[in-house]
Each structure stands twice: as C-alpha cells, then as structure tokens.
Image (tube, rainbow, N blue to C red; front, side, top):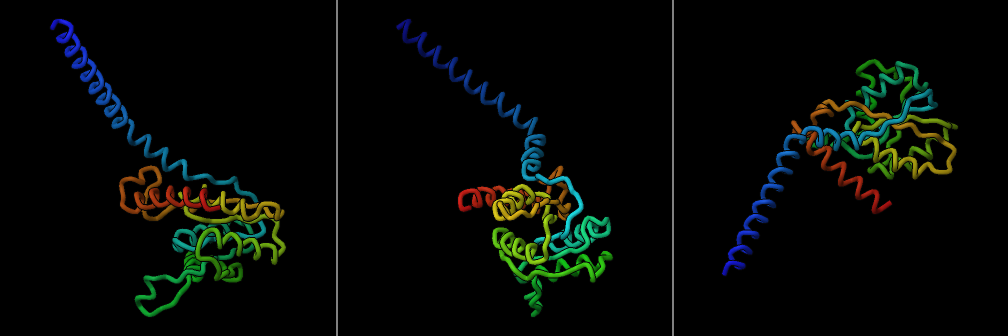
Length: 214
C-alpha cells in the first residue's frame, strides 16, 4: 500500500512537472512571438547588392509597387532599359470589360511616376515565376545582356532568386534580384494585416512547391 501511494504521488509530481514545463515554454514563445514572426518574414527576403546592369525586368503581379520601383531604378541609372513582364490578365479590370495584361499595368505604373517611355518595353509572357524566368532568359539573350536586375516584391526575393538562378545556370547571364517594398503591409510587422499574413503564408507554400517540383 505504501509503495502504491508513493507511486501515485510520484506520477502526480511528474504530471505537474510536465504541465509546468509546457506552461514555461508557452510563456517563452509568447514573449518572443514578435521576434519569431519578424524572423519568419526576414527569411523570405534575400536581395543581391545592386550594380549597373544592362536591363531591369519587373515581374508580373503587384504592378503598382514593382512599376514604381522599376521607375526609381531607371532614374538612378541602374540600367538603361526596363522591361515589364507577365502574361496574366488583371481579373479586376476584366470585371469592367477590360483585358489588360500585368505587363501593361506595371508599365503604366512606372510611367505614372515619371519613367521615360523610351526606356520601357513589355514582355507579355509568363503566367508563373518559372515561366517568366524562361521568357526573361530568352529575352535577355536576344538583347545581348550579360547582367540583369529582376524586380519582385520583397517577400518573394528568396524564391525568385532560386528559380531564376536555376533557369539561368550556365547561360552566362548574371541575375541580381531586387525587392520592391510592399504598399499593403510593413515587412517588420507583416502579421498585423491580412495582406501580410496571406503573403507570408502563401510564400512559404510556394517555396515548398517549387523546391519539390523544380
């Protein structure tokens, strides 16, 4: 009886110890939640140091922020020419009966903030990052470029860099990936907005998808 009583007491102490340990870790994680979330966002951002290039390609999607960043880079003299890409139509504009491709939306965004239309061209190709990389490679080769800057949204830079370098491997064309700051959320506090939450969640899913498929 005495041994059984001691055994029950021991099991109770172990349960309490486990519960206490679990609570301790929950408190630690909760107190460090912002730092953890911030690091999750930072992990998705991997940009290259910019140098002068032959061409700048602004990828399809998020035309306003990428178009504005393209215009800013052209104004700095980062390259003499910019090309907007993307063969997807804007579904929002289709609701108004307008069939406008992403490449044209990004070009218009660059023009609205002062880009010289003589420095802009369009490449209405590609419905995914993998497809865009192939079309950009062919276009860069046709123009005789040996260094290009690829503009995408900040949280896309790690994935875009991996995809483009895989496509461009052995081509002799240097790819520099540059991130455009999002207009919808603060990358330092992305979890505060629905847009930020969706962006980071989707980007991690895409990273896994591209890693498994390509």
